[in-house]
Image (cartoon, rainbow, N blue to C red; front, side, top):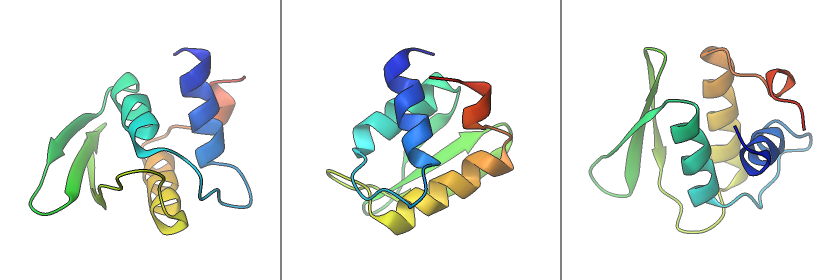
Length: 87
């Protein structure tokens, strides 16, 4: 995982929750982690990683804080931690 991906991962787990994370960067991070991403109806995407699946709204620019929290919770449930990828 390159430095840019690690930066995005740490931003997802930052406190307070950031509302300034670009969705495309998160998408690239998830692919780097091995996730399968598929487009769903409307503006939603499905993310499948380590046997877990979550559906999130596809933001055109930066993710709202609710989406960041949802992705953070999903990453925690599949065992991804920023401590595993130090900056």
